[in-house]
Amino acid sequence: MISRWSDAVITEAREYREFPGLFKTLYFGGGTPSLLSEETLEKIVMKLREIFDLENLAEVTIELNPEDINKAKLRNFKELGFNRISLGVQSFRDEELELLGRRHDSEGSRRAFEMIREAGFKNVSIDLIHSLPGQSLSSWEYSLKTAAGFRPEHISCYQLTIKGGTRFGKLFSSGKLKETAEDIQREIFVRTSDFLCGNGYQHYEVSNFSMGEGCESKHNSLYWEHIPYLGLGPSAHSFDGAARWWNAGSVAGYCEELEDSRLPVADSELLTGDELALEALFLGLRTRKGISLDILKRYDGWEDASARLSALSLVKIIDGRMIPTLEGFLMADRLPLLLID
Image (cartoon, rainbow, N blue to C red):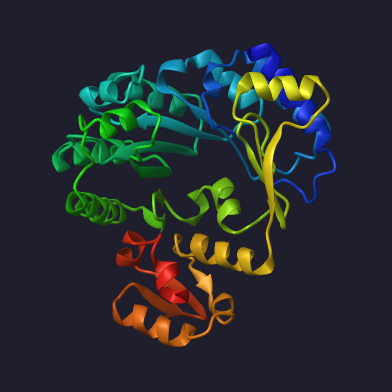
């Protein structure tokens, strides 16, 4: 399917050559792009550069799995203009990697990171997953401290989400798997923030830490700030400032639509001003930049609600913005509801 898929991505890109605005970032992810051959990746990158104005990109990222990395591939990434690597480590405990069904082991992750540095990449992110079934606090701290010891510019610490239809989801439904207790999840979250902030990182979004503002994920920040973005490929989402649409999830279905000269859009939605404001509220309260109080002023009773959340130490009001505290980050998904209910 790789050849059909790559041709389909290029065909889809041509359909959006008039997409509004200038692109600031390019991100190859949402799957396993490191599985692609050098020839396939080069073909896609060069075609994208022909179709769009990509001359002044601030950030060009590729997601890599540790087991797919070698020196030749890294040289190729450099030549193609990639300047940021997102490394899917997930854990430095081999038993946890086995539980997650990963193909690499902890030693493979160490070797991969060293090769990335030797290749000259100076902007590297490490992804970790916590709150795994049966994971102890000490086991999580081992992975966290090991990752921080490499001094990557960015670390993402995602809590495991159990979704229906997945292997974990089926085990959970049958009672063979238990979610990590809420009090342990809380302790993991707080200790993670305390440790990384004490070691030179900024907790700039609920799950993300950077070594200074210049190392924040510029690509993800565009989502949080409602900047238009274009997604290409199966299941990809796009946003033009008012409308959002997303593609069919099946690789075969995605290819078939484009081969039959149809866009592979599965569904779309046109967002009203109120809906955009609500999204800005939800997204902004997940980041250390917070939200402008101007967004809140459209909601009745916002001043009393803000004072109440401030008294509970969930937010701070600084220079006309509402900024979530660490306690606020802990309940980021519920925080906006406490403001506008």
